[in-house]
Each structure stands twice: as C-alpha cells, then as structure tokens.
Image 1 (cartoon, helix red, strand yellow):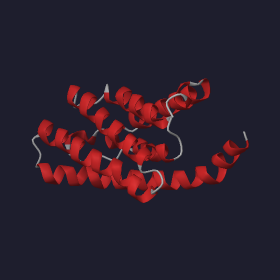
Image 2 (cartoon, helix red, strand yellow; image 1 turned 60 degrees about the vertical axis):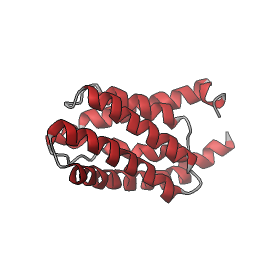
Image 3 (cartoon, one colour; image 1 turned 45 degrees about the vertical axis):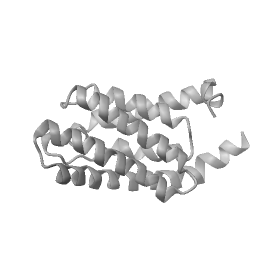
Image 4 (cartoon, one colour; image 1 turned 90 degrees about the vertical axis):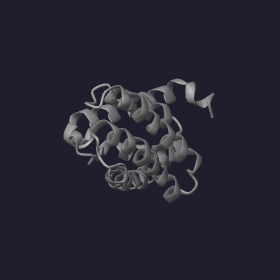
Length: 163
C-alpha cells in the first residue's frame, strides 16, 4: 500500500483531497469551527469516508485538516487534537473499508470524543453534551460522505478499473 501511495498520481490525489478539505472548512467558518457553541458540522468531514475507496485520502485528509485548523479559533488544541482525530478517523475508515457502515462510525466516534473533549475544555461546556453535539454534526457529514462514495463508485471507480 505505501509504495503505491508515493507515485505521482497518488500524491496528486492526496493534494486534491487536502485542498478540497481545507477550502470547504475555511469557506464555511460558522459551521466548521462551532463558534464556541459546541455545534459543529464540517461539510468537509464528508470526505472522511474517501479512504474506503482511496488510501491516498489518509494523508490528504490529515494535511487538509491541519491547514484548516491553523485558522481555528480554538488554537493549538484544535491544530493538534483536531488533526489527530481526522488521522485516526481516516485510518479507521480505511481499515474497515470492506464494511462501509462500520467504517462510517470511525469519523463519528473519533471526532465526537476528541473534538468534543477539546471544545468542552476550551469553552467550558458540558463534556457529554458537547461530544453529542459534535457527533450529531459528524453523522450529518458522514451521511453526505456515504452518498459521495455511492456516486464515486458509479462514475470514477469503473473508469479507474479501465485505466
């Protein structure tokens, strides 16, 4: 797998995913950064399902999240732990790729626990409720991601197999 991830095509796919994640997050700051309320639904998190189809998505998602979190109002906590949550989610999604619904639980759980804890600590919000809020937002984003995966399987994957 790792040898395959370091060719030009794979690096380009990772870079495109990183750029798309960062732009989607930065372009919608009220949804993306929770505005101190705990409610957060990053539309970019729909991309966390991509490791089901593309292992190249793992570094792309991680780098895109790191870039987006550099602008987070939460600061260094989000840069470190938010990025870690995305990395854990992406690796878990890849490892469970043969069971898409189970794979979809990885981003939800990872972000609900890690990002929920960071937001709770940063904004003095109740821990369990903040985890629940982040988890609900993540479920919405992951549901969009599952739709995206379905569309990619019908369009991109057949052409990928022919190449």
